[in-house]
Image (tube, rainbow, N blue to C red):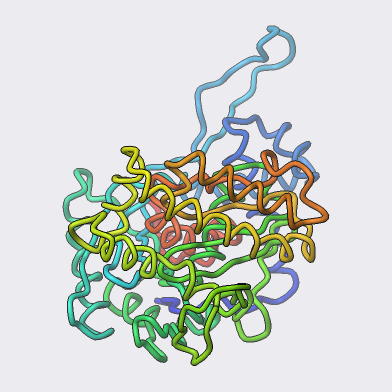
Length: 404
């Protein structure tokens, strides 16, 4: 059995064309289903014969299901048999490695998080951390009431991630280097296990399950302990020749004197990261424990000092985003930051700074939005790595070939 721990390699041209056609058909049903085959042909531009053939393949894989015969709402025309996604086909696992903990989740093929658990790292190293998150995933699967099949696993994190080889090349804050996370999970579960940057994964999650305008062009900015970004033009996420695209951590921040691990001062990540924000709040006595979640709760409850911390950070982030927005001119700028999701005044401050310092963002209320997945961004990031592969080329998921 072929088990992938790296991104699928380029198939011969006829197979690539087939994968593109089948993937586009599956994504159309995801967005618009249930659909008759005639509408699928119109929306994809594929011939009726191709739609019939590819739909049969997707039915055989268990990704689509036929619904009862229907007629047009106006009662005209011949009856048809619509098809829709079959979420009973199986689940995907989603793993995200943050600085203090791993997030382990299971999702259905519509990108809905069905179960999620946090696993603190403690003092463990990468081998033990990946082992514990694999154990937690196995527990979540065992708790599913119907014994759902695992189709594949997505693994996301910050830092430098080599998608092709399923490796976390370097994560300075975790102290990880050359961690073969994909291979660890592929061996344990016998399914594809793919690895990518959390920002790139959240871009694809948005394009598949979130805001439709993200399919034109989108810039995503992740503000956590790690600060990074991702950009996609159409449905192609830019990775860069060594998978380092989106590295904005060391952009200089005017006026900042915060020391950075790189040896310089005033880097963006050192200035606005969750760790720095929480340190300031803890020193000021705003929170009992150094927790971003507690700080967000305190700010959302109205504490003026806590709100001021998020407001100042939002202004710095807005100024940093402005030149990137001018260079890329995306249709949409998506933010992944827990405070902004609950503090409308901080989000307004960020938008105001983007507009003030950008020549291209003239309507920040329309252009600068929160990610659609702030209810579970880390779980979604992990799961989206695998779901992206599924919706790009369903034939890369060997478990589907065994669909009953």
